[in-house]
Length: 536
Image 1 (tube, rainbow, N blue to C red):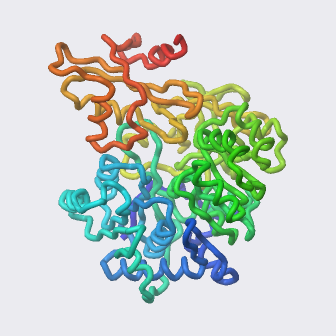
Image 2: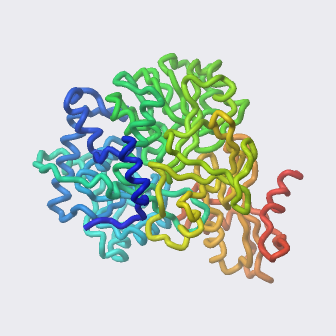
Image 3: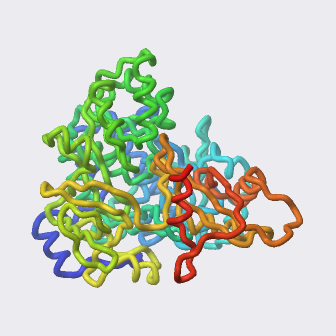
């Protein structure tokens, strides 16, 4: 059985193979190649434990064999929700080896998100952690199993003790190598898109491996690289840009932090002599403000990547003077295109731009609202296609019709301008989305949940500027006439949390208004709502 997805046109696929971007090798080759020369090297550490490349390979083999005995096979799907821990990579590689395509939920996702992923994917397997509030007992997992009959296997990881997951990967079992089609779906990434329904991004072995290997080369990783994974491990940024997979390709070591705070990270940097890491702008600002008085030796750091949201020039200028390492700006998306500032870029480009694309075959169009190309240096909507940019969301034909033009260029929703050097400068978003410190919030999703409250007539959620996070969210609420209860921000926050939504999606501010402003064609005028913050 194979998982259906929108393929690249034959002529482009042939070009990408001819130019060597697609090597028809599976992502598991990242491990296989290290076993030849580096089996004893440390692959992953999480502060108290570490495993070698040989152990990562054998543990993932054991887990793959165990899951095979449970009836999982190529073409099945799975859902993983684990914190930053060694078990995440063991599970990820085990499923890749089986040909089972997982979607890896973020650890701050709650029942709303998990239910949505199960609805779309119909997974056969769930791997989760009892350290998550949803899995402290069996209530939520029992409800999932009742609702989704496809879900036949649940493996829980108990971080402070033995568990079925640990037993499964630690018990030696033979797993015969299986042929993996490199053009097949390896796993699904999560979109930070602007619509109310979570969208899944099918990533193939070929396209993802190319982006990983090329990113590792651009970022000059090698066997001495010690990478601190401080952001959530499943995020596209710390997974492949170049992230943990890039480090595995280079033969370096990944060190996992529970969160990106200075309290969690600075001691790890000193202990493991970390050379590379990746942060979102709010985390970087915390590092900058705490570095001087923290009392830790951070001199091993060579490079800090910053992405997920636009970095202010003022903050960018402080990285080298305060942290003593090079800054690399990264602008990418789980759908594909990734841009980096380069090691040999001039200072102005590093401070002021968000980099240029990985590949010579990353095609960029910047267009106006009518779809016409704009002059170079002019702000417009970003459209792109290339050897690692997907061609369609999973089982989402209506959205794909809007997201792609007739030539297969993906509209990312970003407003950018391109310099003669090829570097991009991000100027904002065209889509109805809030970028809260790198976490993308689809306004429509939260609006629909609030409209489910009996006392709410209309709602509009917009971004408002924030000096730390870049953007926060504000919900403008119009109440029904004579509501029986008095609504407040506290009541509505509690209401949303009871629905099981991730905390970062709960609006930071609620503003009650008599009516929402409308455009000439009768749509909610969100531009006017956002303008109210400029006037304050």
